[in-house]
Length: 346
Image (cartoon, rainbow, N blue to C red; front, side):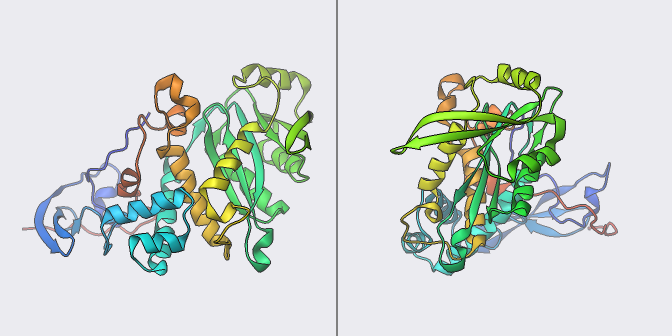
């Protein structure tokens, strides 16, 4: 289980020789820098000879507004506020809020790629949700997948209901979930592409069941399931591992869809802010998924270990995080950087 720490220990420049294997980082305090937001501490890397501030490499670098304004804008977005209302309350332009959301989404993608993983999943429920856009974007859909035992939102994909988009979504689930010796259960509705995609992506590591729900007056009156991938013996093995229910269903991913309807203004049926570009919805969903997994305590885990997030139940982190913790995290340097020669500092 990890503990996210924010103090700087390494040089943030990707081409610094201190990132080489068995190299030693030598970062010391250098001076102070006066900005209009206050005095900031500067640091010096003794290896490459360059100075930097603590926010270099984070979302807060060279931001003209206080960090609390940026964090408050992201919190308002996760509560379903529109971009225009956030701009009015924070007293900034809508373009500034849009740039904030783009920077935050890019950062949380790298954060989740580094930390989001689950070993030996038990049950994964997948479903799609329609987004309400303007004009030609009315047919945009959101794919979502949740691991039931931990309530971890493992993957999301924004696109049309095509075979290619379904492949991207299921492959994103495979990158997060590391299957063990015992197969796990994949539950979905009767969407025509799920059977082929799950079979080609997971193979014998998964047992796929499609659920057919019959509704009457907005309520489920009958639920039947059909085994699509795997044998009946494997199905009995995975059903014995289930703790929340002993019958295949899609109740937990449907509950996630309800949360998304309230938390994202682009997914509401009657919304004052229709989605005009799929990129806006993708950025909002990435930030919302990070908030759901790492920040927001889940009510299903309150009686087990106190206020727990899905990431805590998946043994990823030992405590709930905050937006300040996530945005202060510095991504590791990408592989393939050019190493500079060490410089001597007086």
